[in-house]
Length: 403
Image (cartoon, helix red, strand yellow):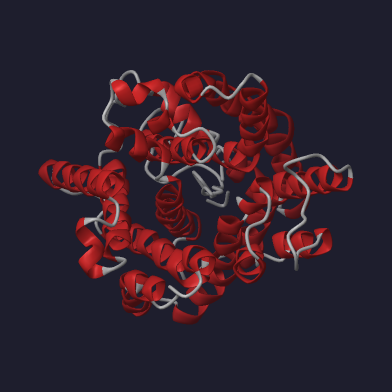
C-alpha cells in the first residue's frame, strides 16, 4: 500500500500548496499497484500486446506493485518528517496530541469502513471475500487490521483475500506513526537521530535476506518497511538542513533517481542478484533522489500532460484501500465473458478509470468530511484552521500521502 498522508506537502510546486513532483511519483506508484493486482489475474504478457510490445515492458507494468509500496514508504517518511519540522519547528518540539490526532483523523475513517464492509461480505459468503484458509478467521483478521499487525498475521497464517491483504503496508506505516513522535522526543536532535536512521536505512538488504525462510514475512516484515521509511526521514532532514541547492544538483538527483528506478523496474533482482536484496536498496535510494529533486525544484512548472497521473497520486490512499473491489469485479466479468487471454488487455481499459472513480467518490464522501470533523473534535480551533489550510492527504495513508 500506499502512503497515507496528512495535510499539505512541504515544498509546494503549485499555487495550491501541493508538491506536484511527489504527487506524480505517488501516482505512478499507485498505478503500478493496481496494474500488479490486475496482472496477477490477467497477465499482459499473455495478451495480444505481447505481439507488438516487449514482454519485458509488460512484465514491468504488471510485477512492480510490491516495489511501488516501498516507494510509498520513502514518501511517507519524508512527508511526515517535513510536516513535523515545518509545523513544530523541531523534532524536540513535536506536538504529540496534534500528531496523533491528525494521523487518526486521516487513517481511521476509511480503514474502519473498509474493515466493516469486508466483514459483511465475508459473513454474507460473497466469493473472493470469504476468509477460509486454515488458521485464519474473521475476528483474527479484524484484530490484525485494527491492531496494525496484519502483516505478521499473514506471515504466520498465509495470504488473506485481496482486499484484506493490502492492509499489510498500513500496519508498517502505523507502527511508524505510533513510535516516531516518541523517538523524536527521546533523541531531540537530528544529529542524534540521523546515525540511527542511516544504519536502519542501509539494513534493508540484510533484513530481507535474513527472512528468506518465510516468503510472505520477508516481503511484509516491519524492519524492511521501516528501513524504507527511515530513508524518507533522512531525506526530510537533508531538505531542512539545505532548503536550497544548485539547479544542477537537482537535475543530477532527478537523473539518478530515474535511472535507478528504471533499473529496478525493468531488471528486478537480475543484476543485483549477487547482492541478494541489494536491488531494494537501489529502489529506496532512487525514490529518495526523486523526492529530493521534487522538493528542491518546487515552484517549477509541472510536466504537461501528466495531470491525470498526479490526480492518482492525490487519491492514492483511497485508491489503495478500494481498488481490489474493482479488480475482483472486472476479473469476474472477464471470466464470465469467456476469459480470452489474447484480449485480456481490453479489461484494463474500464478497470483503471473505475479504480480512480471509486477512490474519488470515497475521498469526497468519506475521507475529507470525516477527517475535517474528527480534527474539529480533537484539535483546538487554531490548530484546525491551520490544518485545513494545508489540504489533507494519506502516507499517513500508504499512506500522509501529502501530509
